[in-house]
Length: 311
Length: 311
Image 1: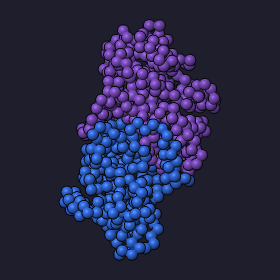
Image 2 (image 1 turned 30 degrees about the horizontal axis):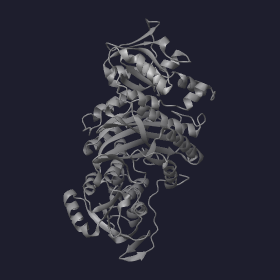
Image 3 (image 1 turned 45 degrees about the horizontal axis):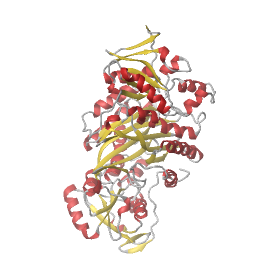
Image 4 (image 1 turned 180 degrees about the vertical axis):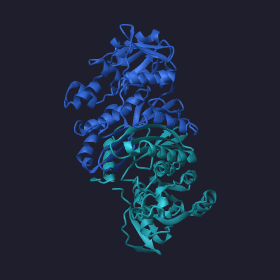
């Protein structure tokens, strides 16, 4: 966008900050949070646009349906909440109204079924030539489970679930015409860390958490800014099967990025891996001050990759 | 759409009916309803597409911003709830990113400010050539205030707020190049009946309620179907300044359509009009059986206009 997304969102947030909040927390996390007594409800929304986020020639309708849901469930689980319901809006050109729409709904339904998530509302309309999808995901959690970007503490271990970089390597494969590599499948079928996010939400030793949608090089900065801290990340510790640039600056991994009380990290890791079967890897540490420092074998290096920008 | 919107939505609702509902009511009303203890929370979403719902040449960016919000607040108020917050997703082509986006946000902000509604989340992205807007509106009300389409009772008076037909007459004016008639302004600046919906929500003598988005000829059928009743409407009773076809089959009036216990209608009307300054007009009666009967001076007539179809 002409104005960067973050600046435009920042302007909007400032503009609306004077209005009454009615119990909703201000914008800043993966989800907005609203108080429901013992529980909190969280809500998030993502818009998926044809020829910006997917190509009809490269992804099946089922895959687009599945991924449109998963990227939203990922934001809910990244708050430590259980996804319970979604609202789906579809703008479909004539060319997508029969078979494509049915395929999309099959993919969306199958993923909803796997995760036990209801579809509770939506809107369908026509469009002139391209598909636009908007999903809202709603989650619930006991209030203490909600994990915010603002909760990192100096000394915390920075950790990530799974392995990074496959999705952006897969996007490159797809752009080069290679639709069926392992990495390309990762990109096409986003798998959110839902059970993992819920489990981590219940651990009081987990402090800040978010999902990795733009790459850790960009996403860690949100935690730094909202927590008022710095960070140090060891490149060789980052779990990946691909080039380190995909693993740090590549988007759409939908793994979780979190900070954990340092003296409790080993036991959280052990328990997490045994409960979920998903690896949890320490990649760095929360520091004083506002700097992001990259190291390689412990030595500070210059590393200026920014996270993935959609525009 | 190739499949009509209602059939596609019906298929989707059937497909998802087996999934757990997590306390959300099934699809069917203007909003989905979720239990929050003493209160209920309601949620609705609408997608607004360039060259389908608006033309950049005929509506200012401010007007599109205002209307995108108002059509959603109308759905919330039509449930008897107070709108408290919205989520806004915007897909903007390059040509709409500077001035147009700022104008849109001004219109959206001003209407949010008037109604005391927070903006609590959203998404912005780029698109290839056309604007798509998705708004989610959230409302709250004490549980007994929530008005459903399924609550009409045989013998109820059918009533409408305000006057009907201006918006669709205005759309015709606009299509003929006449952008500044009174009717065209009605179409461009949708004004939802928010205070009116909240007031009516608090009356136990008001049974079913919904907003008029597709015209009463189409919208009354939702109340009939979900309440398992019929209806009789007197054409000459319909309050309008325009041709009766605009007032019955024209869309986007955003007035309220409601049913009221017949022996209480006069007192509800008197109190409503004195509190809100908005007229409330009886136009018919809920009947036994599933038929919709139109009368003119009490005599049954053939009248087959269907409500406005967006596609």
